[in-house]
Length: 169
Figure 1: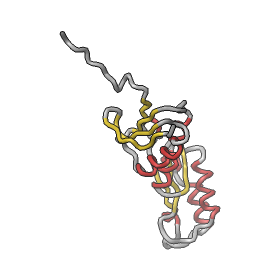
Figure 2: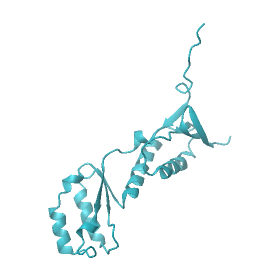
Figure 3: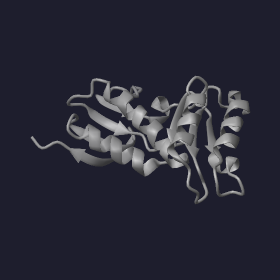
Figure 4: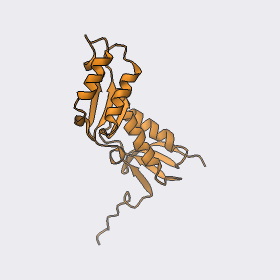
């Protein structure tokens, strides 16, 4: 007599969360104001405004853009504001900061999407695989926000998990 194989993982009440399903996968791009500085140190208003007007902003179309200055220079606040006005109708998303700040912003948005799911009293497995660049931040923040809602949190794959949290009864 043949024994029927039962997929206990598929039949379990576990909710499996994979960041790759929630995080915005749009291309990333970077705008460094250092390229607009006179002698790599000074931002001249007239030159900068001319640059802003003539620059090809379409290269940022539908991309997630980080805006920053990578050199130690005094950049007036209004300069970043001007860049924001040009990216506003072009970029998918824009953040002030470098790649890490952009990734954190995208992770925070993904977490908000996850939190919109009905996870009250759920047993959650947060998948460990994926293409996240700020993994520790992502898993820390998601765990922090899930802990008050769920019964348990595990890390890994549903067939092989590491227990992280279990609500006390």
